[in-house]
Length: 212
Image (cartoon, rainbow, N blue to C red; front, side):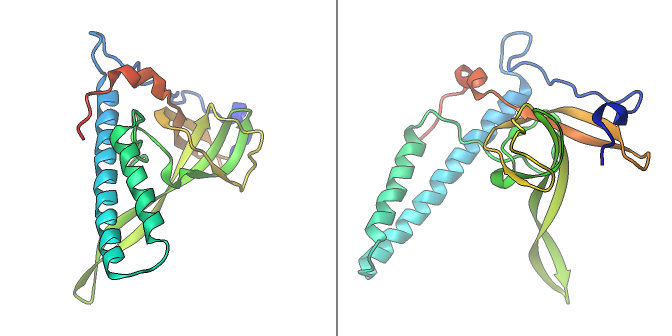
């Protein structure tokens, strides 16, 4: 826990560091933004592939069955595909584990667990990342899902409706802007990642040409 935010900060704390503008010194796309845009394009293509696969399955089912509702499902998938192919909006993926400074993305499952509200627009929160890991049991390999919690200092979002213990939905796109070190009640220094809302409009003109 934080005692009070002001008194908990240790001397010589590692302050949150901004990762810079969207462009580099020569006016080109900065490496962190270029990586983010590439991830968005990969997410868009992946979403199209998944929907095309789903659409083929629905059409095959429609030929074999007279089940009601398949036509509506097909129409919805076709609509989603048209939007993905034509939309100018970025398909923003979730932050990936392990989370690194400079990363940009949405929170996993678009939610976080509020640990403590520090001030208006600032809170401590935990996000749970689901990971697929390979395990071996009785000489048989299998894939299991494990959960990895990550603590964040969330800045720049309204906290008037937030309270400790709540699960809060946050649809924003976030950038990991640095790290913050604080001292727990037990006197142990602890460091958390700092995330702040990222302005997608700031990179709208930097997007590369899309492929269908």
